[in-house]
Image 1 (tube, one colour):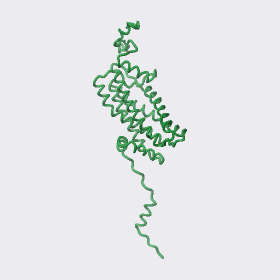
Image 2 (cartoon, helix red, strand yellow):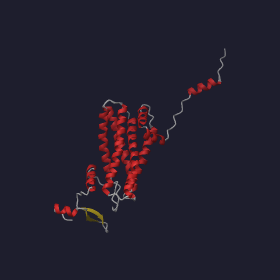
Image 3 (cartoon, rainbow, N blue to C red):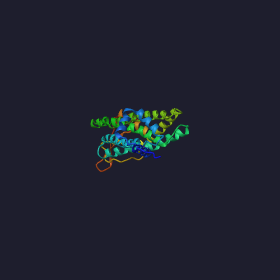
Length: 282
């Protein structure tokens, strides 16, 4: 007995046997828009995709976001000095953020594994990158404030404090998103993991920022180095700038560029009054 097979049945069987096409890559702007509008959905996507290795589009988008947004904020910082410093700062800010991610993402996986939490290096990298990408978007949103300060000839130390304030706002946003992501993965030792990661981020981020300085350079500086020799620490520099912005100086002289390439010195405001009390003459 002959069995007739419909052509439609044959096409259906062939379609069922053929592999399903790979999902189309999502537009980077759509991912950035979702990050700004619905961060909970992005974190849920990371948690789901971390089990099926489907985070390539998100990771690529966050890398580009950090590079572009960090460069724009860096250029806004460097414009205070102008010239080559605009390029230097635009290059160093994204490097600072990406190097911090490279160090801290494996730490998150290590903390998760040590505390018996679910972990995946790809998912943890995507989470740290996404949090840093969100922070970079907060930075670029504040860049016009620094541009306005530079155009209004804001004082050097006041500008440094303004830059530090912008970075603090962006850092808090990144930490908040990291905390939500860690808690969303598992509530087991979530706060312990978050505090441990914040400690690593604070140390690594501060050291990276200090290593890549200067970002703000005095307009009268004759030569602009890409990086300076490592000396002191970030906290000490912020405290010194805070005192200087209030007119409290810790030295009597400020370097001025000399005509022959050497640096002359000019007394700082209040130096004469201070010398009467300290016995140090200008």
